[in-house]
Length: 296
Image (cartoon, rainbow, N blue to C red; front, side, top):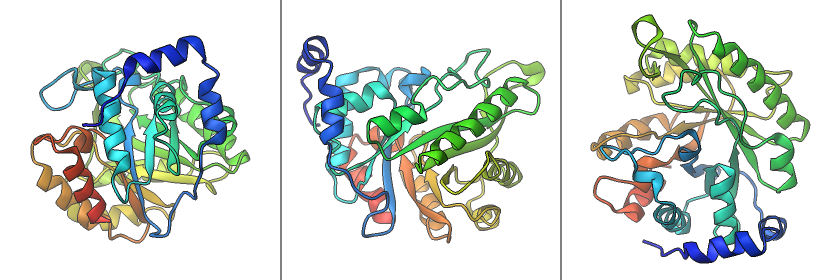
């Protein structure tokens, strides 16, 4: 694993916080899609939602030095285009020089904390459109979970639409990750995302129609419970899309097979995966990332 000097990062933050903006201003940029015309992005925005678990370890992502080392290793692998994360992680990566020539996606709404009563009232507590523009980042990402039984979803829908408008005004892409979600009986229990074909189809239709324009909107979508349904599901919209990875447990090979088929669909442009590649069951981050890149 790449070694990260956490003490040095902290010293810079204490003594020269302006170094973050300076690093952003001189960062080498690139087009969203490279010569391959495909997009491979590593996701690491989970901690800002209080979601730190991977597999059976509830605090796998809680060690920042370890997480940064895994990210640096993943970003060094051939074919990896960039990273999606919250401000604190992207700033660490800027100071480490790990974002040169990479696509950078800022995570915008992190207010729906995992397990909270207000989880589906997902306020935009992360990057704003003006922050992404000021820092010279390449795109934003927002999560759109809709529970027909939870009034908080309406707040999220409204603020998501305005965020898409704000990004479009700046001609910046925004990746919308939609789900139909629900809690258990009586509104209790954790939020569960519905991955049935009908639910994913409906969520794509809702996300595609957000805001005053969809010109700069991309979709970030899951593979359905039955991967054979993906062709029909992805016919719902002409918007460009990437697949999301998620926590796939111990069966890494099964996840790769799900991704492989869906990546051949005409609107699917790439893959955004995080925990499944950064914390693979066998511990081989480079091997997991290389295999995912090979699917493209």
